[in-house]
Image (cartoon, rainbow, N blue to C red; front, top):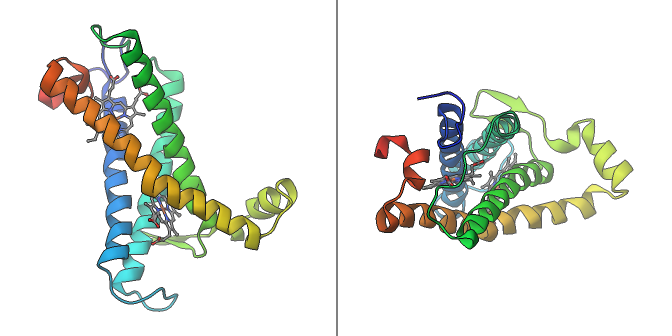
Length: 201
Ligand code: HEM
Ligand code: HEM
């Protein structure tokens, strides 16, 4: 299999990053819902209870996703995107493209708003600390200089964008996207899923 995409197929790098990001989403969602539904102990800056472990895992998965998404976008810019699989209607191709752009949008918006609204440093997979946004030199530049506001007004807005995009918009997109891929594989029996999941060939 080729490293880069060809006009008919996704290459190894695009496929690897697609599934790494998908597993990253599984980790980010799994940890935040574990925190909401099953964890014990409250928010604490001193005690590493299961609530805090789940929260740090969420932040760590989110930041990992951001790194892979940056690589993915770079790769997409320097590499060709395979042509649409023949057979679908014009509308179906348009819908698939709109879905991909929407997924790129949430892949960018979620980590950025998550990072900007977080009140604590990220203990990255319990290895090292990544400083929170409002301790970085970007904070005064973006929030105070460009947006001319302060943390009390800024935080609830980015938080609301993060939570609503994560809890509703992104789920809606992923379910439609994965559902369409499975529909192509099971009902249409075409190569749409196989070219992103070559082990099914
Ligand atoms: C693509 C990556 C991410 C996804 C899919 C995601 C998704 C979510 C979801 C679904 C929630 C809970 C919303 C609710 O209240 O129902 C949440 C909360 C939160 N996220 Fe993220 N997030 C991501 C990245 C990040 C990043 C990078 C950070 C910070 C470094 C972050 C920080 C937070 C915080 C502090 C909360 C509130 C904690 C909580 O509700 O338990 N997120 N996120
Ligand atoms: C079980 C889960 C998933 C399945 C079965 C799946 C399947 C696929 C397939 C078959 C394609 C190729 C579509 C085509 O050739 O037109 C694709 C592309 C894509 N997927 Fe997924 N996917 C899944 C999860 C995700 C997740 C979680 C994201 C991100 C949030 C995502 C983002 C994308 C994007 C942006 C593309 C377009 C790639 C490009 O051409 O630039 N996928 N996916």
